Length: 315
Image (cartoon, rainbow, N blue to C red):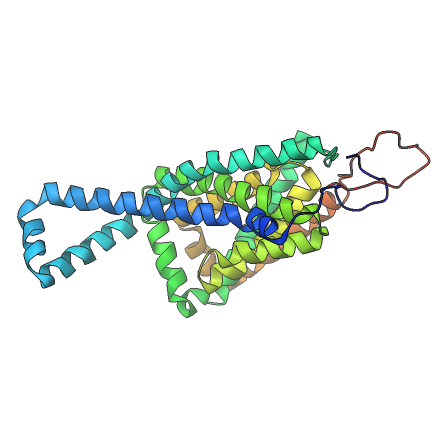
């Protein structure tokens, strides 16, 4: 099936409601399933390690409800302490699974004659890095200025658990593996599949809402929604999932590094300092947005005349 010039959407055949819902929500359900299985494996491993380390206490827990509760609390504590490692292991499983779905979608596009957006040249990815750094630092400054950490205890506990791991482990898991797995899922699959039959704003908004809700606490929901919109825009303009992966990894690496070196504490020590840095971040992010707006992502359609400026954006 060939694209018809002037039709703003790709020429995919109609699907029944059930199949469409599975197409959109199936990968998320699979992600949850993988997370559940990895968590079970991790908890089982921790229980076995505890059994070998202190067999007497383990046997006591089998005979005493009070001892069992103590054992359970200890296992949960160890599980939370290993949260970053477990996240990394989960992402390692999720990445190849989501890549298979992502690759199948690209094959289907070719089969139906969809012409993808043009890919931006490598040098323009510098704007992705600069915008990501500016948005990440600026939004975190606003979170600290608003003292939202105190308001949302779940957010504070999540941050403490994430950043309690060794720094190299944080870099690998939070800075590399998690961004790849999440971008393949939320931008490479969810956003892209929504974009098949909707406008950019519709696909970006709904995928960003889901991305935010997945973080399960108020601060990260708002933060995730804003960055989800930006990541979808970057994907749309650059024509490659590598762009949002780079942006997400840049933001996570900055967060990990800033926490490690105490950057946020240094900024918060002087209200003028953090205010100035926040304004500079907004300026840099706005400048990079203007730069990205000038990127021509629309595909060159076969047989298009030079005098005809009409172009079709195939998500």
